[in-house]
Length: 339
Image (cartoon, rainbow, N blue to C red; front, side, top):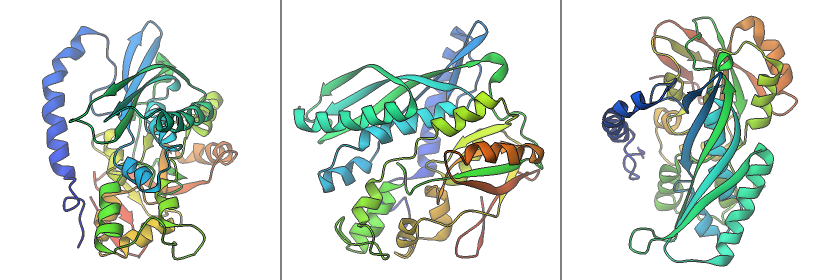
């Protein structure tokens, strides 16, 4: 079986590494009025009756797909999406971002293409790109890397951390459009290294190429989620489903579990990866598997929340919160997975 670890990414070792880093940095939280613990999707700093939310992320090894296709006008969307989607998870509306472009050597034409994606992502998210940094780092960077740091704001009494999540709450899943920006080391090993596909090979349905599916930019969930904020619905938790799949839900509240048993149709790109001898449990531990964002609320709130979401995206109830701390997922091939 092909695993993420074999492709060069050890999730468990990453978790230990992050824990070691976070433990050393925790003492700095006392210098300011910090609301969220480290490990949540975004950090919150209290400023009067409001809080500033901050998050940082990058495009990751999806950049290698852009290089294979010589197409750089979408990775900026991914950069913004990975940041602003996390900021939403504390109830904050994203407002601004700074980008960081590190290059092996300057390439004005490629930089212009990257900027196209940043502009498109900013337009869709309604944020301002207020500055950034470009660094030439030969010997450290091969080709380029792109990351961003974003800020948002939220009224103190409207912060959503997940602390109100209770057993019996329902999970409303918002569909993804594919891999987004996580799990590309595993995808490349399974599809290219092991199976011998190329970015120009057609998908099984013949409608798109593998490259087109892999480079499809991450969905931006700002418009639908901010619409929920504006309606002031009672929302108990928000989760951006990224690397780690549905185990991301553990960022919200300790002591509860999730029974995820009604997922939407899995995008074909995931099925193709799975068919290259990738274990089904690994698939749901690495990829979003068709759900890019989750809203958690009381069942009585679900219908009106979905009515608003459906003005912008596809969504459905995918499961419920349980009391046993286990995450159970009904996989697309019929098995039940536990984490």
